[in-house]
Amino acid sequence: MRIVLLGAPGSGKGTQSQLLVKAFGIPQISTGDLLRDAVAKRTELGLKAKSAMDAGKLVDDATVLGMMRERLSRPDAAKGFILDGFPRNIPQAEALSKMLAEMGAPLQAVVLLNLDLGILFKRLSGRRICESCGRVFNIYTAAPAALEHCDKCGAEHRLIQRPDDKEEVIGKRLDVYEAQTKPLISFYTAAGLLRVVDADADVNAVFGNIRNAIGAAAQAPGRSPSA
Ligand code: AMP
Image (cartoon, rainbow, N blue to C red; front, side):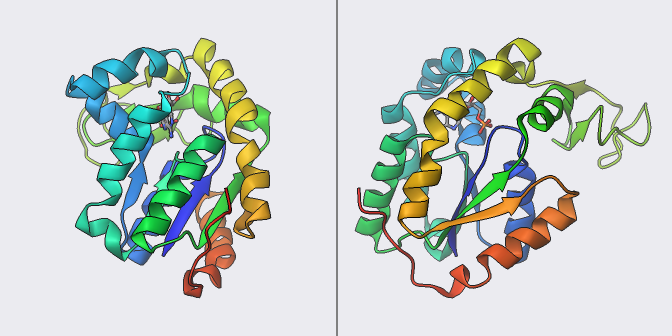
């Protein structure tokens, strides 16, 4: 299955991707995770990307597309993938459809996780991550069960906040979504690939909605949006 999870920052793309990985045995390809990893390892690409990320802006298309081309060419992507956080604008979507056409593996569905802006803001500003295992909590909606230890790995809590989840950066990220990413809704609607899912529910209910939305698409041969 080859799908894109589309949605604003905080709409649950990362969490739902992980459930899809478990259910379908295909990799999640998150440009945000790949970029954060490059920043942490201080690679040339990471150093180039860091200032845009810290400011809540998009990293330049050439950098992201080079990274994606390499990632999609790895063997595990041959059986399918879930794209999380990519594409983020029309030029990236056009480049993706070209890349996948060359690979003979067009997209089968684009799932939009639909959520109100006010809820997105709360989700992002409340997000905290266990430094040891990466478990995601939310101080407003999914607080850790114990104060001292992580529910998942048991390590003493060191909950960290992503630099771009600070309130002053969130507004910028949501503006970027509105201006640059939202036009993808029309782009993929025109291609007959868009499925809209209500993302204002608990994690398992949203996952059920996604499964229903992609049920038929998973069997389809896929489509290339005409650029
Ligand atoms: P995310 O984890 O998807 O919210 O991404 C975190 C940050 O990484 C974004 O705010 C951007 O700075 C950068 N980023 C992630 N994906 C892309 C992309 N497809 N194009 C450009 N920048 C991206």
